[in-house]
Amino acid sequence: KKRIVSGVQPTGSIHLGNYLGAIKNWIDLQNTYETLFFIVDLHAITLPYDTQELSKATKDTAALYLACGVDTSKASVFVQSHVRAHVELMWLLSSATPIGWLNKMIQFKEKSRKAGDENVGVALLTYPVLMASDILLYQSDFVPVGDDQKQHLELTRELAERINYLYGGRKWKKLGGRGGSIFKVPEPLIPPTGARVMSLTDGLSKMSKSAPSDQSRINLLDPKDVIANKIRRCKTDSFPGLEFDNPGRPECNNLLSVYQLLTGKTKQEVAEECHDMSWGTFKPLLTDALVDHLHPIQVRYAEIMSDSTYLDNILAEGASKAATIADDTLNNVYQAMGFLQR
Ligand code: TYM
Image 1 (cartoon, protein in one colour):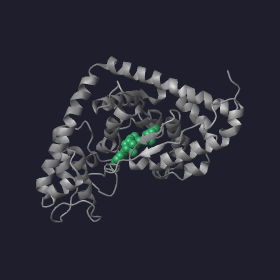
Image 2 (cartoon, helix red, strand yellow):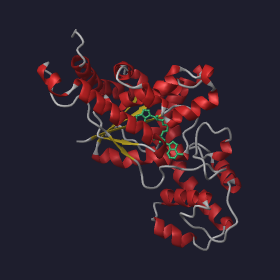
Image 3 (cartoon, protein in one colour):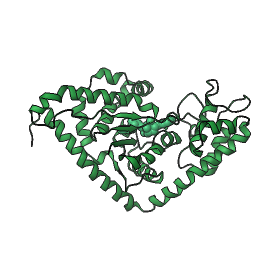
Image 4 (cartoon, protein in one colour):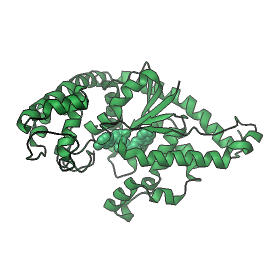
């Protein structure tokens, strides 16, 4: 079976962008592929964070994975920091990562510009190397993510090829290794719709956990009245009718796409249904679609959180399965790079 890995940071609350861009797509993939889904807590400390919140947010995120439909009889779910190999491989990878590659990363440039040099930890720069480690450790074939992770995936691919070139190949075979490549070169899986869910208050910027206004996003755990209020107040325009793909109407395209994904209709169906609608007619429809979709997730979330040992057991089991695969890769890398074996 081909293997898939992916993860979400336990910072802030999980929103509709995380769900439609990533998590929702995991649910179908787990039936066809071997899947590992982690909560990337080590990534969550690259910007200032609250130590009181980290472990709670980590559990919350795990519970939401399950509530959204990740099925632990098929997928392994675990916490990144519980599998030590992630950090260890990161060090080995970082020795072969040119600083220039990291300086080019858009997310690093944006986040460091906002925070200022004196406030930016080195980990914000090396963040993509840790992400590469998350992926390469499991010899992953595919990585389902939203559009904003494309550049990190590209770096992961280049890094895998570089390590394979530097330490793999014939040299590696002579040392008695498995031969061939050390890492599989993974491919991103970016959904055709939903890969970039936009802010409710500005159709030109993406929905994000770090945006100051909570009005800009729908969180998966938002109650019904909060959702209704956010949709009532979200940014629209004053053109007649509703349509996809009009560059002058980014909010319209975004809200129709969200509606399409939540209802499972085709783009064509939604385009026809909404062609002559006013915002006043569409907004309650969208609110209902959101509430109908999120309510069962919220109910399951509450059930899972009410039995905390259940979740702890799932995470322990996931970590031990993951560690077996990860340690195997890590040992190979040490060997290929010429370290003395224990
Ligand atoms: P994170 O936590 O920022 O986001 C988690 C997932 O949600 C997607 N996403 C979106 N998709 C559509 N529209 C949006 N507005 C939107 N906002 C976020 C992201 O693309 C992502 O798929 N570095 C990663 C986490 C990570 C990871 C990994 C992912 C660490 N190691 C290994 C895959 C494989 C991140 O910060 O995602």
